[in-house]
Image (cartoon, rainbow, N blue to C red; front, side):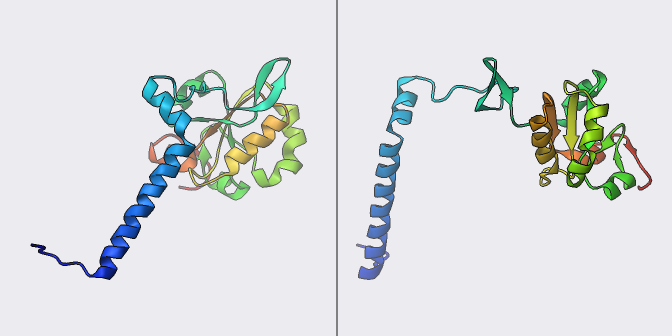
Length: 179
């Protein structure tokens, strides 16, 4: 016997849900047939992208792909980058920079890009390694500034996505007037 008798309405709802699930699976499998077939036959599902090759397929100069997006770096990579002469750039606003910033960083707020770009180009070579940061993972300013600098011809642009908060939480040195 049935321990839990279902009303006809509830049975119909379960049947409709089951039919929707089966139809969804069928559509998903049919749209991804080649991917699924390759996976089961042992072929590569996708080819890996090299870490330093985040490129737009149309951005090619003299047969060589050019980065059009800054490359993300982690906190543990910064020591090595700074040791070989990378330049830290704070893309936060000037007030935040004055309060505290990563030791050795220069201020280049995204909001002042047009005003400061000419001076920046005079002071910083286009082949200089640049590591741009802002206020952490939720802040797009470092990435946006990186894209702008790449468009201006800078070739080695990196983004430290953890930014100021991760650096501070890790106990790394800060400069500025605030605590």
